[in-house]
Amino acid sequence: MDSNDLTRSIEKSMKPYRGKFPTFTQLPTDGRAREEILQDMRAFYKLEESKWKDGYVSGTVYNGDQDHIDFLNEVYAINSQSNPMHFDTWPSSVKFEAEIVSMTANMLGAASTEDEISGTVSSGGTESILLAMKTYREWGRVEKWITKPEMIVPTTAHAAFDKASQFFNIKAVRVPVGKDFRADVEATRAAITKNTVVIVGSAPPFPHGIIDPIEELSELAREHNIGFHTDACLGGFVLPWAEKLGYKVPPFDFRLPGVTSMSADTHKYGYAAKGTSVVLYRGSNLRRHQYYMITDWPGGLYLSPTLAGSRPGALSAACWAAMISIGEKGYLEATRRILQTADLIKKAINDIPELYVFGDPLFNVAFSAHDLDIYAISDQMEKRGWGLNGLQHPPGIHLCLTLRHTQPGLSEHFIVDLQDSVKWVQQHPNQAGSLGPVYGMASNIALGGAVKDILRDILDIAYSA
Ligand SMILES: *Cc1c(COP(=O)(O)O)cnc(C)c1O
Image (cartoon, rainbow, N blue to C red; front, side, top):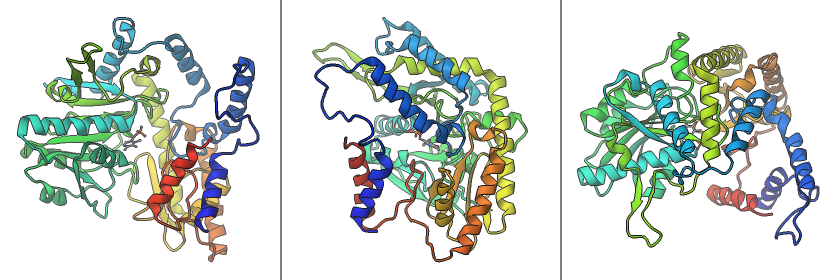
């Protein structure tokens, strides 16, 4: 495949509506009829709904029950004009956000420590991580006179940490993970310098789902008076309930004295609508390093807690409503269903002789093949409608289980398709799988030229009308 073919194939999958629906490259002179707009919206919805609703994708939609969606939509509609930046106009938004933070903190060990746990609501896991890393940079500068800050990050930690390193000019020191896919404690110890402001661990990391040794890593940080961030974007709303259900969950939250901050995504297993997450800190001092203020702007005194200025109060309202409508019992039951399904799928994958699961993850199951091309298997799964995540270093594929996968018959269907895909690949040994798994895309993309150029092309295509 040359790069033109590649561009064409990306365009084909990203722009299926060209020629089938009206395209607007400039504003229509007369506004379009609302009913026509709604008709097209409903058509898009219909075309796109089955893929996520029927449980064919990894992660992505974590709840998706129709009555839950309807309820969140109603909450959104009531609050669609609200903006927590204008806290005098919408004190309700301020209340929702304070309580989201408090409920999340208490779920993650705040009740078991003397320290106050503070935090803010953000727009997603990436923003929570960006904010935490920016906070440690400021903390290091103000309190430790560190002008060349460094963060120590396991290779499996989310790409958002690398983004933070680039955005905020913090040197990211990458430490390898061991054969068990957990962050290497000794390599981390060796990587600490006088410029280290924070050590990172994930509970669990996205790729293989194996929780890092948070206890050892956070103690290491504490010994050196360095911050420690647990990225529980994925696990924050699962692990506390998994523990209550009797699953083996290593300590990862504020019950560990060395953990000084955490990220937990309400818009994943918190079952809120997309667009919210929580970042938490031990004490109230660290959070102050996150805030932004300017006192001499002609527009007046200005303050904001996070990256955005104006913020969608309706999303915080929907998040708050999701949390209190589900409650402890609801989260416990959801987790029970997801983990039971994960157990079933893990066992079934390991029962296919050609395949093996990487380690023993709780709910995001990554696996590979002994002597077959795992990307070819992934391509076959895609042909059967499945959107799995491709992994690299080492090659693998990944199914992040959500409530969508607990629908009756779904795990059995997944396994049958997986067995068929393995058989197909065995019978077609010369059909190489496409290479280059792209996060967030179902397909693996064959890589011809410089990989970063192709990734840039993908974003350029996305923004072409
Ligand atoms: C999803 C995820 C993130 C980032 O979250 P976004 O909401 O996509 O920005 C960070 N860390 C882990 C482990 C995740 O799974």
